[in-house]
Length: 133
Image (cartoon, rainbow, N blue to C red; front, side, top):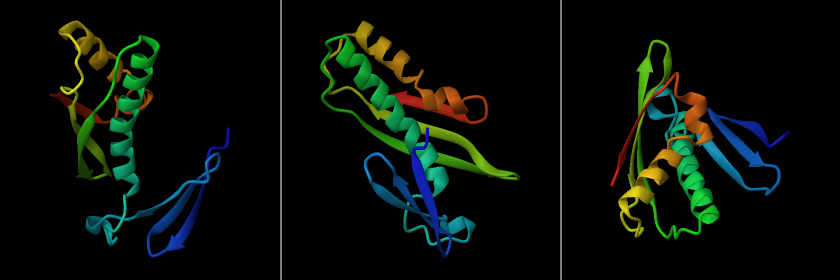
């Protein structure tokens, strides 16, 4: 299924278009790899998509189980290796404490988050660390 189109804009930038919605965003190479760092880099998007996917899966789980899911915020850190240049580690601090779940529900929500499709896709190649607060 075709989901997006990507165009090279020059100067290490791309324009990415989501075909169904028409939404677009720009990527830029990071400063440490010849870019200006003025937009998400492709590897920033990879790391950020892990947090976004986990939140989405939590939302799906809560909707299916009649649970309130009012607020969640995450801070994402990415560590690159240099030879070869790749994402080595993604660390996510996810704040779930504003949701009024008991310990059992919170444990299940964390389990569901850790089974998101992005994590399952990259877990063998990227070290993933979560801190849930």
